[in-house]
Amino acid sequence: MEKVLTFTNEQKSLIWNRFVQPAKGTQEEANHFIEVCETFGLNPLLGDIVFQRYETKNGPNTSFITTRNGLLRVATTQEGYVGPPNANVVREGDTFEFIPSEGSVRHEFGQKRGPILGAYAVMHHKRFRPVAVFVDFQEYFQANSGEINSRYKNKNVWDKMPSAMIQKIAEVFVLRRQFPLGGLYTREEMSLEENENGNSGNADIPNQSNPAPEKQSEVVEHQQTPEAPIQQPKENAVEGVFILQSFEKGVSPQNVPFAKLNVMNKASSEVSLVLVKEKEEIIESLSHFQTGQELSLVIKNESGFNFLETFTLVQMEEQNVQVESSPEQAEPGQKEKQLVSDTAEPLEAFIMEKYEPGTTPAGVSFAKMYVKNIADNKQSMVFAQGQEAVEKTKHLFEGSEFAMQTRIKNGFTFFVKLEDADKRSA
Image (cartoon, rainbow, N blue to C red):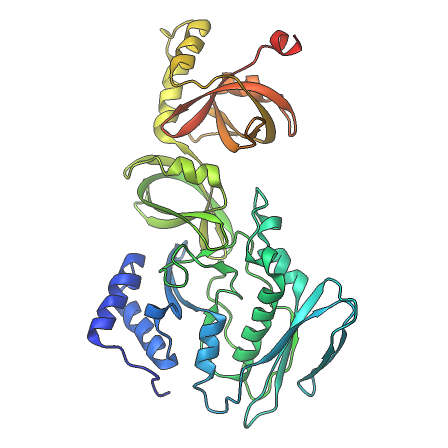
């Protein structure tokens, strides 16, 4: 296949420094990336395609991700191209007739259009018969909606522009079916969102849902079925002590907070990329740590990506164990007074949104309390550290209102005490 463009040595050096090297890519992977870009005419310097490399249980995995617009640009260079796909969204109330054997669609808008059913796309070719595809809306929306999948119901582009997104999916499928576009996959079909730099980032953050299913009716003429995406490892969870090597946080154009952590397993010295998405309290807490800090992490692998589920600070676990086991510790009343004086906040009223008890690898009991401040409606995460704190808070349930005093240390908010029952009744 003849190359569509050729990069200068200066441009190749820039691509290496800007995209490949920060992702810890090898020179061989960089040469492969350059070859794909030049062959298909996709320029990473213009955001047409991104280099993505991440660690999996079976070793590093590398993929090149483009967009619907990038894929369409490639199609325009192919022999037989006669124009962009004809695509639209089908809603309840429309007249819609899909004929797979002919690769044709008949679609008329209804006078009263209801919810989205799906989207179709038809693409013609100079030599071959038309190719038509139809994709089901609910399957992709359920997999990608931020309001459905995020803890705090953060809306993303699928919630705000569902028609545009399902139509893009249909267009991507028909482009791939009609033209030999190799192993190129797009953000839209892989459930990826843009990072804080738009298309130009060297790594993208996937949705926490699994990639959208590929269930659709289609006609494929004179075309082989493309290979499935590489990232299909079995989901698993790992818990252990890791050393923080780097931390980066940002907000996507869809206002979804995310973070990227490079951590080294203390036991095996294996370095991994761990992603955090939409967990604002965890992201904020992690931003206060310095490199070299030891953290106890629970990491879940989904579709080849490592996601952080929960974490605790190893140093705090050790300190807490020492305090609980020391025979010379102060009386309970004196200890509470000392905690209150340590950057303690005044008593405030909260609503419990979620209560998650747990135990660290060191055997220390703790609980994560996801609460909302009644006064300013601000959501936060409060740690109840140690058996005593857990016993005092475990009776709280979702939706309960209570007054609580907290203290802030090293960027974390810790439980100090609940307001006395007799004071609340008064």
